Structure formats: structure tokens, C-alpha cells
Length: 443
Image (cartoon, rainbow, N blue to C red; front, top):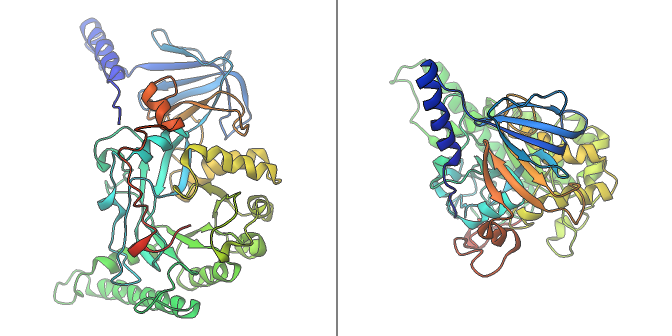
């Protein structure tokens, strides 16, 4: 992994030294001005020949060139003739060689993706090459519950702590991964039928309710507190809405089973894959549950996904469902993430909604809409420079920026290798994927 020299930090130190010597005041962070691009901010109409101002890690301003004044001393980057969009948010990925639960039981809420992420995995650089700046890394789907997911900002880092998104209280941000359908249907102690699988999950959620109530009744009295359970603590976070459920599901009957459990226990949920979501779009919309859709245009896969349709996103969107797309990398390639939305547009989805599905819609599913997903003053400076229209097959990702720092540059030979492939491009990447062998599952 190529770690770029800290040129921004050097500039900040130089500017700070000048300001201190002249005024003895706190120095301002350096400003970068990206000028001349067609800007698609997502939260507003396109801006022709716009200007994006970045101060440190944050967007300072965005707008038409005649409405955004470039501060004196700002570093100017001319991106005339290019297209500038927010950093892409992938709501379901397996990069980082993530591995979750093992074969000992079907429900393992205490397992954390945090403890299995390889921050030097080449898949992270390949995601940067696809314009992805924020990602939900998930354990596999061979369990009814395979562990806690983790939300990452795809900075250049040495350890997972350099990439992990933090909540306001300092804890690591993430959801929890559940699944139904054929992936977790195995020999005991796993459920061998759909009915048994739902019964196992329902029973565990009832245990979590009881644990929560016992803790509440104890009111801090150690003599009355139940024996501590990391598994129950994680599920209590689910029941209290603190941790989003990211639920793998394909068939229409499996989708409705998730909605039934959600109504019974009141947890927040995002439905993932939803191959037959188009069959029950009205039911999903009535439940006000978002869908993170996978787009696959090649034959094969599993029998329960045989009715997958490229029109899925368009149908769900028209029904009033919040729709996002995901890569499920390595089921589809992070470097081709824009293509998912392009195929949905080809199948009838509105262009604006398709771009939202790669950005702000997914940010909402990760509770990160206040930080990422649009080019808005005050949000994180995550953005992508494209050679042309986001949905054209001829368009290339030219550069990707995270927190105001360039993490991918097509003109850099090492970065180009990650974008295009070739000898040495995957030296740091093992096909562990979390979804095969003892881990079970797949997309």
C-alpha cells in the first residue's frame, strides 16, 4: 500500500509558522480550491463550472464559480472538463479479509468484524480506485447472525483504527449482520428449514429482551445483575435502536419474514440484496424499511436469486422505498461500483435517484448522513473526480479524496495498477471473503 507524503500537513505547518510569527494567533488549516468541474452535489442541482473549497478535512463551500470566492493563499486544483461527485458509500462489502462467526453456533452477536480487518488488504485500495470512500464491512451470511459490522472511511492507514468510523462517544461505529434463506440453512445447531431459522432468531431476541429487563430491574445492584453476556449486550443495542440490523435476504417470503420480526421486536433494519424485492415493494414501503440492492448482470448464482431483476431498484424507488446499491465485494467489483447504478438507470431508474443510491441513501443506512453522501459545507471532504458522466461506460475514476486527502490518483503508477489489475495488484489480498468453507454463504 502506498502511503503518500504528508504534503498537506507540511503546508499547514508552514502556514501556521507564518501566522504565528506575524500575529501570534492560531493558524487556519490550509484551503484547497477545486475549480472548473461540473459538480453533482447530490443535495442540489448540477453546478456547471463550479468551485469546491476544502479546508483541512472538511468541505468549506461549494457552488458556481461566481458565487464562491477562493481565499487568498488557497491551493488551486484545476479540474475543468471533469465531473466532481461525493465519495461513494458502499453499504455492504467484504473487503479487508473480514471473517466473522465460526461453525460453533448459528447466532454469534459478540463477534466483531473490527477484530478481523486487515487494513493493508489490497481490496481497500481497489475500492478507492472505484471512488468508494465509506464502506460497511460485513461478516458472511452463512449464519443467522454472524457478528457486528464495521463502518470504515477508506483512508490510507496502517491499522483498522486508522480507518474505523467513531461514534460520538468514541465507540466504533457499525451495525449487526443477520441472514435468512438458504445460506444459513445447515445441520444442527443451525436451522435446517426456514421456519426453524426464524424460530431460533426469535428465541434469541426474546432472551435479549429478558436480559435487558433484568439489567433495568437491578438498577446497578451487583447482587441482582445477571451474569454479563457480550452477546446479549450487542442484541440489546439492536433492540434499543442503537445498532442497525443489516439483513441478508433474497426471496419474497424471506423478505416478509424479516419485516415480521422487525415489527415484533421494533429493531431498525436495512434489507440487503432483496433479489425479489420488486415482488413485495409495497410491503417494504409500508414498513418504511430501506433496501440495499445488489445489481448482477451475469448468469449463475443461487436458485433463490433466480428472479433477480435489473428493474429492482426502479420498482422499489417508485414504491417509495429508500434504495441504495452495494458491491458485496468480491461478488461484484468495488472498482465497478458506478456500474451498478448505471445498469439500474438503463432499467428505468431515475438518474438522480441512482446517484443518491450510491451516496446519501447509503449514508442514511449507516447513520452517517450528517457526515458524508453529499457535497455540503461542513461535511467530510470525501469526493471523486471523474473523467465524464458517472453512468457512462467510458468514464474513469481519476482521483479519490477522503477527509481532504487524495487516496487514489490514476496518474500514479501504483494506483493505476490497483485500478486496472496486473502483476502484483493483489499481493496483499487473500480470497478469504468470509462467505465460503466453514464461514458458509455468499451473496
